[in-house]
Length: 362
Figure (cartoon, rainbow, N blue to C red):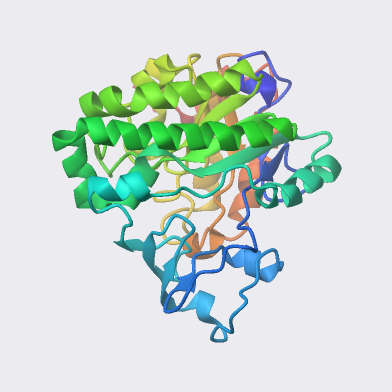
């Protein structure tokens, strides 16, 4: 993993899957049991936290509530409408910061609570001894900013209240540095975060505004991670091509894309190949769903990513999409993908064969 991300001539393209065969040990923050939201809200927790009993409600909740439509509140005070039958995320209904006076009184969750890290830190010592330990710090600056202010409020703040917006972002930056620090103390190899910055065809925020308000804070977190010897990886959905140069200049180590078609594999190779690594899923819109893809298309897509993105003495990590139930993939699609990486991803890459297989003839 390290050699692939650092363009250090790995022996093969690494694979980040959901089994013990994975080269990666994922580690995530869990909700402290001490956090107990009041009625009428349901708790905003992940279903796995309930399944494995890492979080339990002290009040009796309706049977099966997590899999139904419900209104929940999270640790940050954001109120969500969630449909557990479709997704675990949901839509923001109400945000805790409605005026800048609210910001003065607002308290973030405690990033130093050891209950957030202890389970996966222990698992990492057992299951991650020979694997790349990749720790999540949750939703990142842009997402958390608009969760806390609401979408309209956040967009208005970027334009009309950049000073106050910057103050909130500075507070969030300190939080993420603290969370990263807690993971680093526990021996992780990399930090990953989620910040969906793109729509289907363009960024959700202007490149100028993102550069002005967000990139300096993103760079602070990246620099902190690099100063402590760990990589920083960004998951982002959508077409973020216009934002990528600024993030690469900020020394981002890798992008994680579930829909590589939205940025374009060839485009990323031409403009960013060898400058930043990619941790990519076979495209979840156009190739992996059973209604649109096939086993042959999955194999060809893997070969295409290897040919364009892994040819720089590294640069590519294959990975899987976690929400398989929502995706409804091609039968055995992820096994087909993994097998294709094993077959075609050994270094030195056979670029002549890969190119002949997937590059259209003139």
